[in-house]
Image (cartoon, rainbow over all chains, first blue to last red):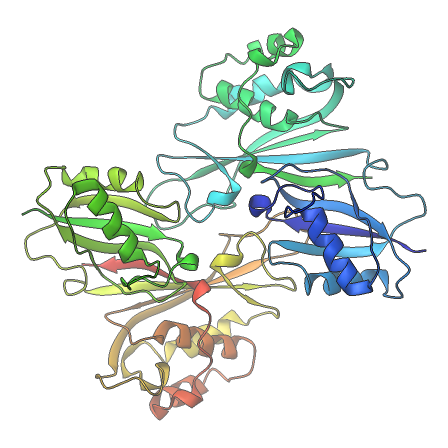
Length: 255
Length: 255
């Protein structure tokens, strides 16, 4: 049976996350429903990342097997005709045998967006976290440097959580100002900080807590040099807040 | 009684337009409700432009009189605490005696946004009209030139409509590619054409029909030289389609 690989973007604001849940609107549930309508067969779709409620994706990767005679590259347009406007199939193609979107992934990049400025965003409000004051991006970069590498990220996941191993490898953290989503003509300067975290794997909420900790650095609450201490403390209470889902995007999956 | 001038931005996608209508969600209705909650008095808010259902505003101007002792510049933040997230008061200040947002206006600029590209927009889908093919912006500019000046715009308003005088003065039409709302990381080039129409007054649907006519020029259906003939025909059937509300913004009001 052909194995089809899908690249999907979505606005997660109105979903209870990726994972299928009985009676709730989820990304996986919507895609499986659309596939069932399309092929007539019940199909399980595996995703590379099980994004939480409200989290978005620029390029989630998923895969499914099918007995359908539809050519693999035709699934994307056919699904788009059956998916709601806030989920879009970007591309579909035949996957190599044994491909698994999660287990085959060598790494992922998450994007966290923070808008600064006196007024909260209007048109972009579903896709960005708002911070009223200015941010010192240089300080945030200095703080971020302590997180790059293989570390025990126990301080960066909910305290009750980890039964599992909490060592993860962060390959890079990049931070820059990005014009995307600037709101024109309000007469006020708008800046959007884009935090890109690339790693081999992530703990639950890890990117949102990294973003919250670096936001504390950027606003002057936490000295950049303290990030290394927070990391080595392995104490969730030392790290910053879990920032809201609306600013988070699964940006890319590497194979 | 103090006369207060408000500048307002809104995402009109979930509203039945500006104008108060019993039992329907409208921008004027929401602002009047918020003012009543704030001051305890029933207040009529006049707007510069009565935007249709689904139309947005970057800087709508409105005004109201009040007996409240709230300082004029405090109304914007106080209203924002009582308005939904898709309506934002940008600024409030004392207006000069006799100021009327509509009758005092010397002109307005409307913005119409068209996204080109093979795939419909995802994150920006509420704020742009999608056109699959490429657009010839130079041809559109050439066509637009015929519309600048004082003309009878009867061909650019619904045929059943005009009892009223249909001569209007368009001061300028500008068209350019704008990065606002570009969608990153999908691997596909994205272009957004911004059409800015400035005039002393507008007929109902005039900007959306101008945009539809120029889109026909941009896609090669209508030669640029034919726009002058469409205008002088005074025949609605000769002009292009009325483009959807979602791409339209009241961008600025001049006093």
